[in-house]
Amino acid sequence: MIGLYTAAEVRAAEEPVLAATPEGTLMQRAATGLATTCLGLLGRAHGTRVTVLAGAGNNGGDALFAGAHLARRGARVTAVLLDPQRVHAAGLAALRAAGGRVTAPDGPTGLERADLVLDGIVGIGGRGGLRPPAAALVERAATGPGLMVAVDVPSGVDADTGAVPGAAFPAQHTVTFGALKTGLVVGEGRGYAGRVHLVDIGLDLPPAGAHRLTDADVADRIRLPHAGDDKYTQGVVGIVAGSSTYPGAAVLCTGAALRARPGLVRYAGTAAPGVRAAWPEVIVTEGRPSDAGRVQAWVVGPGMGTDDDARSVLAEVLATDLPVLVDADALTTAAQEPDLVRQRRAPTVLTPHDREYARFGQEVGHDRVGAARRLAADLGAVVLLKGDATVVAAPDGTAYVNGTGTPWLATAGTGDVLSGLTGALLATGLPAAEAAAVGAHVHGLAGQLAAEEGPLIAGDLVRALPATLARLRRAPADRLGHSGA
Image: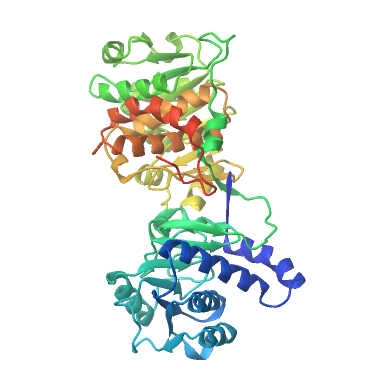
C-alpha cells in the first residue's frame, strides 16, 4: 500500500533529518531527484529551453537548484522571479553560477518557446489560488509548448485536500518529495497533478492514516478458489435490488456479483423475472430477504424504490448480524432514519455520491477524505464516497483513496455494478473497509479496460470483470499505484 500524508506529517518527518544533516542536504536531494526526473522526461538536456517559475521559500529553492543541474548539463535555463526580495538566495546563486538567466515576470520569460516549465511558485504550505501575477504566468505557460512539471505539489492545489479554490498550475507531471501528498490523488488536485513521481529524500515516515492500493495489494485480497472449496465456502452474497419499474438495476448488480465469482449469489425482490432470465446461475426468489436462504453478506438498494415496503426490506436486512452494503434508494431511506445504521454491530458499507451524501445533513465540500471520515464516524459505518477519486473511510479514521477509473464511468448503472462487486467481496470475508477499497479499485480498472474499446455502458463493466481480475493477477502496479490498464 502507498501511504498518503499531509503537509504537517511531512514537515514533522523532515525535522529530525534536518537536525542530523548539514544545512541544505534535503534540498539538494530533492533538487537532484527533480532534475533527474526532468532529464528522463525531456530525453536530453543539451540545447533544451527550461523556464523556472520561482516563488519565495524552499519550493522556489528546489526549482532553482534543479534548474542549475539542468544548466550544467547544457540546458538554456531562465528563472522568472516572482518575489525577488524573498527568493532563495543559495538556489539563485547556484543557477547564475551554472549560466542560467534571471528575469522578472514582465521580462523575456521564454515561456512561448520553453521545452520544460518548472513550477516552483508555492510549496506544500500554500493556501488559496494563485495571485494574479503568478496566475498570468501560468496561463501563458499552459498555452505554450513546454512540458508542465510541478515541484512537490502544483501551485494553487491544497496539498492536504486537493482543493483548488482559484487559479492553479495544470501539471502534466508532479515530482513530489519524501511522501505522496493526499492532495495529489484526491479532489480537483488529482486532475492538476498529472502523473506523480515520488523522490526518496530519506524521511522516516510514520504509519499513514490514508492509503492508496496498488494492483498487487488488490490481487492479494481477492480470494481464489481452492481444491477443497464448494459453492458455500467461497462466499454467498444476497442481492435486494431493482423493481418492476427498474429491473435493470437488479440485473447489473446481480451480474457484477456473479462475475466477481463468489460461490453463490441469491436474489430477492420484485425484479426476479428479469434477473432469472439474465442470470440463470442465480438463486432467485420474489419474496423477502428472509425467503432467499443463507447468505454471508447483503447488498440492498439499487433501483429498489423508497416506499414503505422498501423501507421495511431495508430494516429487515439491517437487523441481521451480517455485513450489509447500502446503496442508491436504500441510502435515501437510511438518511431519513440514520439510527437503522447507527444501531448495527455488524459491518455496514454506505456508497453515496455527493448528492446522496448531502441527504445525511452535510455537504462534502473541498475535503473529500475529511467528509468521508465525518460520516463514517457519525454512523459507525464504512463510507465509500464515489467520485473521480473515490474515497473509502472507516469509523476509526482509516481511509483509502482510489487510484483507478475513467470519466467514462459517469453513466447510469455503473454504481449498481460497484455495489454487486463490493458485496461479493464482503461475502468472502474481507473486512468492510478493505472490501470497499478493493471493489472501487477493481471497478475503476474494469472501466479503464472497457473504455479501451470506446464509450462504455454499465453492462460493459460486468463483461469486463473476468479480464480485469485476470489482469490484476498478472500485472502488479508501479510503486505509486498507477494501474497498468
